[in-house]
Image (cartoon, rainbow, N blue to C red; front, side):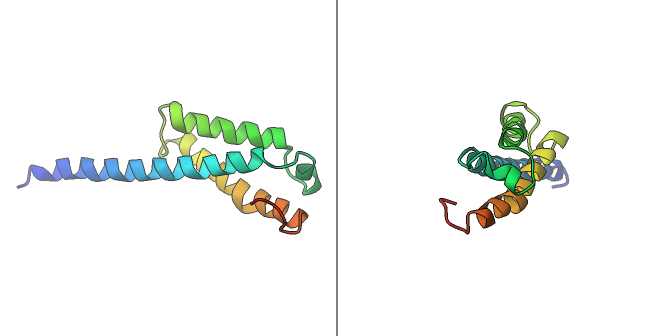
Length: 105
């Protein structure tokens, strides 16, 4: 019975890593698609990076999370999650306020 503990630990770690990877890909993908569908002149109006800068940051983070082999628990995955959340919680809100809440998202 004692020898079963390390096997159980590895299964739990695998499930947690998979759940974090799915969360990271969904959050980064939503942020990237939202940034892609916005007007480029709205970004300087709210005082943030230009659209190309956000697309580069979000696209690179999504690419590193998906095919970089790093996963969501690496430093690159955590930076990607942070960048996507900053975009969604700060920039997206500013873009929505700029258009008076009228828009697709």
